[in-house]
Structures are given as structure tokens and as C-alpha cells.
Length: 396
Ligand SMILES: *Cc1c(COP(=O)(O)O)cnc(C)c1O
Image (cartoon, rainbow, N blue to C red; front, side, top):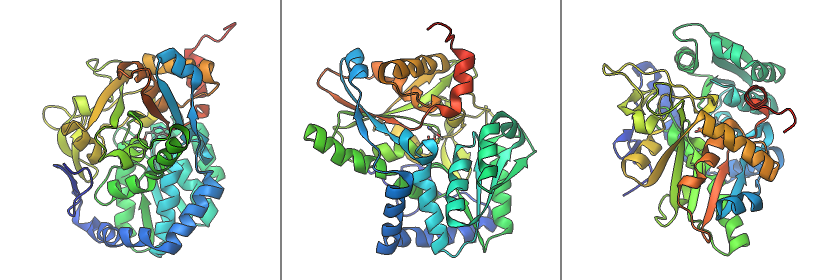
């Protein structure tokens, strides 16, 4: 069984590039060039330099002593929350912006839902002096005002998508329309391991730095490169892809992917794509997606905006289908409880997304001597309003 993408862009029966003909030249240009550019020594030197001095890598692999005591197993947190801009997303945007420059592009477009990918893109565009346009659903613009302000501070133009449900899916349609109209000077940065080939593979490779570091960090701390479990939350799947990447072909490392159950798997208000989804095409890729009987995409729901996506990347659909990864789902309430628990046990306020991974720890059956690496994808600053509304903090 292979877990890497094949030449046609497929992971098992998932993936590919189902795109309108007018998009073909752009995607083909990228497909023909990405691997070669990523392998160039000068490219790697510039990328590694920025990851070190600008993003702040390597991120620590932290042994969470009190959390470990509570769950009676050895838990390490991979601290992606300590990256510049507060999450793993910048690993990918730094990489893609450098690639866009190598392709001679001067104008960067992106779409964003919660605004995290938009902020990471606007940040790197400011750093490189590139024009940046971020498409965002009109409703999300209202819901995510602090991130909209950040993007504007950074010099990005935030364009409202006013069609359909006025959320991420509509913003994606606007971005694709823009790319078709501006094929020569424009580069489209996708923020997760989704979209047509080669995006899922390219984004996974940029995020693979996470498991590359885990290997040598665990070797230093425990005298072995392989943990027993790697646990990560899954929206589109990029932080999990990065944390799993160098362990995909190591069967003794169990991979745990945690999706958002929202109000509950069977509540109709959920984002647990792999369990609830059926095979279909979304954003240029054949994958599992939540849909009605007649194939309409279902609106997903999760308290966490970063996990609120109706599809999942084709690599993860394949990991689910082949049973290489264990899939868990966690409700809003379980995630919130995990937020408070990590905050009080370790003094780390996690992002709501990452808290979904934390809430699954007690379910995986880890033994006292097992080593569990949990990818802490982001910090909770962006979620403070939610936390203040949901927790009774008076006197506690
Ligand atoms: C965006 C985001 C996610 C979900 O995206 P993936 O592509 O599944 O990683 C998870 N955690 C944080 C902190 C995010 O910002």
C-alpha cells in the first residue's frame, strides 16, 4: 500500500485534478514545476532560513508532564502554536510564496474561512512586498473581524464573496474565478491539503517539516525516532498531513486523525467528514465529502471555524479508506473541556481546533510506557471571545 501521491495525482481512489478547462494552464504550470523548484538548493536555503529566523522553527517538542500524569501515558506536544502568526499555516504560505516568486508571479490570491490562512498569506506577502488579495465570505468577514483587521494592517485587500451562503465555499469560487481571469501574473495559495493535484502533495511536503523535526527531537529525548501514536486534528488535513508525513510508511506508528463532531455525529450539525461523507468531487479533487442524497454539499458545523469544512483532503480520505489512520470525532463540548484542561494543567491556551486532538487522547488506549505525540496546531488567542462566552471564569 502506498500513501504517497501517484503520477496522476491520486491517493488510492482519491485525488486527481477535476478542474474547468480554463484553469488547466495554471494548474499544469504548477504541476510541471513544483517538485523541481522545491528540490533546488537555493530554494531550500531560502526556505529553511525563513523557517528558522522568521517563523521560529524548529518548534519545541514539549513533554507535558502533568497532562501525562493525568492520562497515565507519555504525552509530548509539538508546539506549532509557537510559530509566527500562531499556527502551522505559515509553514505552507512561506513555501508557496517562495515558489510563486520562482515562477515569476507578482500577485498572490487566497481564500480564507476563519481568516487564519488569510493572515498567514498576508503576512508573507508583506514580507516579500507582493500584492495580496484575500477572498472571504461576507458572513465570515463579520464573524472574524480581528483577522480581517490583521490582513488589512498587513496591506492585503480583503474582497467579500456575496453569493450563496457567503462563506468559505463561495470565497473559493471567487478566488478560482480571479485565477482564470489572471493566469499570467497571479498565483493562488491554497491553505490546506485540498484542491486539485498538485496542491495536496505540495502542501503536505511544506508541512512535512513537522514530522521531520519530531523524528530527531524524539531521538534526542527518548532515544527513538518513532512514537507509538501521532494525534492531530483534521479540517482540510494539513497539520495532520505534516505530523504524519514521515511516519506514513512506518506501520508501528499509529496515526490518529480527529475530526469535529460539532453538536454530535448524528445531530445534523457536524463536520466529521470521513464518517459522514461519501465520495464526490469538491474544489477540484475526488474525496470524501458531506452531501445530501442528490449530491448537494451539506453545510458543515463546528464551534471551531478551522475544522468547519465539508470535505477532507484526498490523502486523509485514503488513510480512512485503507484504515492506515484511526479516525475519531470530538464534539464542541468535549473540545471546550480540553481547552480548559490544557490551560490549567500546562499553562498553554490552545486553539479550538487543536483542542479536538487533545480531547481524543483518552480514547486511543495508550499504555503507561507508550509515547504519544500530539500536534498542537495553534494557539487560542483567536478564540478568546468564544472562551469568555462559554466558560464561567468568575472565581474559578
Ligand atoms: C486552519 C487550522 C486547522 C485546520 O486546518 P488543517 O488543514 O486541517 O490543519 C487546525 N488548527 C489550526 C490552529 C488552524 O488554524
